[in-house]
Length: 248
Image (cartoon, rainbow, N blue to C red; front, side, top):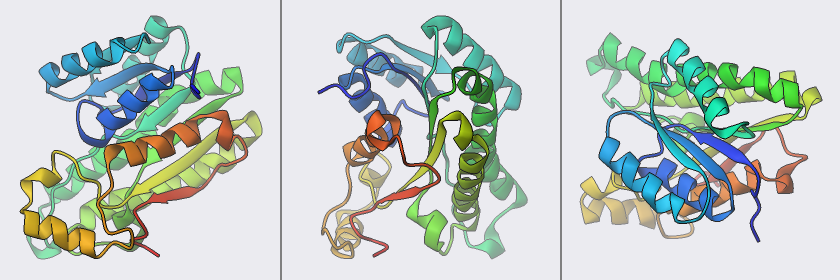
């Protein structure tokens, strides 16, 4: 059953990791996919080729979601290319981890800019379209770290906690127009980034999770499908934890 047929999604930061998993799963559910990448054109093109095989419209855009004007230009281009937009997934994110005493102002500002300001930029850019059509699903990628904090990640935790507050406020503002705003808070998801960690460290993470395994990008992607589809038509302002029970 294709849950997203005749819908169009815009996903930021989708050339790798969780974003890539979301794009692939959405395409299998019949969703047209517009996605952004920051620098890896080769990976973006490979994903376009892979998704096109599903028979859906796909296009990659090199764009910086942290740039307000670039976000506006991007959304206008997507609307022109796809003829509409139903779902926005704010997934772009970076880390610049360090203890507070060693964290530079630049490292703090950059993480807030890319992770949090981008959510404002992109949501603002799609708002007019969603208001006009009186429908739309906004899905913002936070993290368990945004809920409970983490030593050495004050900048990242602040950005991800900010996303939750932003989303809940937008849910209150736009609910009367049938526009839903929800957050997904992934736990330990095994991607290209975690492959750089030693097997011992990864196993240590797995052992501390009630389900005794790390999550896969598809675990997050399936939660996104739920929040993007009509299955969740009465759900807004929520934070869905996809963490194997980490925060239980």
